[in-house]
Length: 147
Image: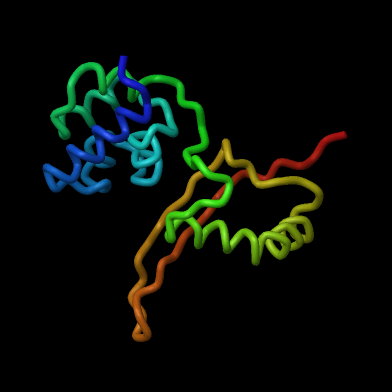
């Protein structure tokens, strides 16, 4: 049996070898690009149809396809503090702006949290004369604390 991590490695290898984008995979799977990428990296379970669509485009075998359908163990970072520069910047953003985000969420919504289960996100490139901007949108349902 192929693990979710091994399946993710197979997906990355096939994607690179075939020159296929995450957007093309999302179109084939019929889901948003952020969700599809997360699923193919092992963080979401795919339906049989979704796994088959991705596997057909990437020419993956039945064992990898089956692994894509497994329930994941969520959380992909091996270290508490990430060392990859791109991932570390998000960690840094939370370190610097986390208390501000918490204050603003509580002021606007009250005592509660933003769901990471009922959640979606998007990444866009926005042209700017000073250099293109990375725009990340995090969109989670508000969940009030209930005592």
